[in-house]
Image (cartoon, rainbow, N blue to C red; front, top):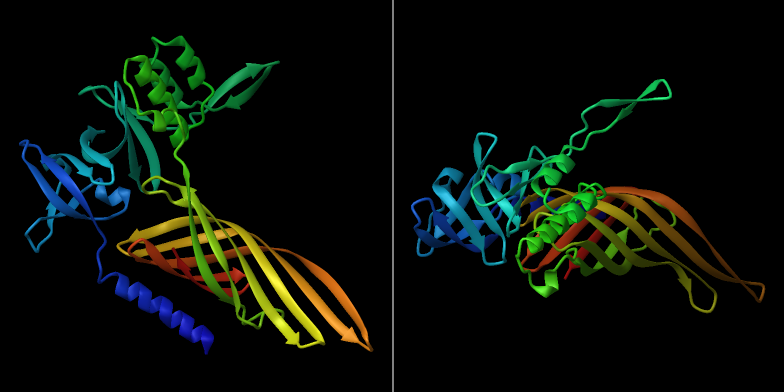
Length: 344
């Protein structure tokens, strides 16, 4: 009965989420230099870079804006999209860094790559490629990988030997690309606020309260209570995160006789594969540690024991946003259990 109820709640969340739209405030600069303050439907980066669904203040209807019609979109939360022609296609790219070189982010078919551009020059595509090359050593050929983005950055920043040497050591990650572009922009005279100067974006933590239930495990028949913690980078469109929680289940209790309870602490990596309006869907996988505490009185003698272990955790979850909070339904296939949580 509980299983059917939980599935019904999840289904209701999915259906109702599509009837409500989460919006952001922004200012659009059009190609003819007109500006307009609007409401914009929040969409995933791969969608919003191809079109903008906006509603002018005082209007009841949304209008579709194409990259060819728009110069830039500045959100009140600080995000900036700029219309740029790349590979013969005009897209609205998310600007990560501005300065002598602007750094942009693009997502196509689930793949994220980057562009740098100086003023109105043709943007340089920073993409990590693995072109097969072979090196002859001791009479034998060994295959090596060619990272194309290193060549592009080295060529773009060739007048600074120190930075070009550092380029060969960086990894193709957003935070390291942002750092190297900031360093070069400062070399060219750009000044950044001290709080963000050459620092990685901070990690954000969301907390919540939860109840869990494991109807298919003999040790976890009772409903448990606990706290949930989500860790993720504080940047737009972040898909990966780290999830953990601590839940407490009283499995058996007899006053002055015996008791048994369990503590479960999973650590899992989450991947957000869909975010539409108020709805967010994610996969999670990792390992969970379960510890049981048991105490029993037999013939006047009390016996205490502690035992447990670790098992893999694989599951999926649904978040339904309510302003800055969220209701969460999560199902784990291994181990088999349900989670209902309120995320602050």
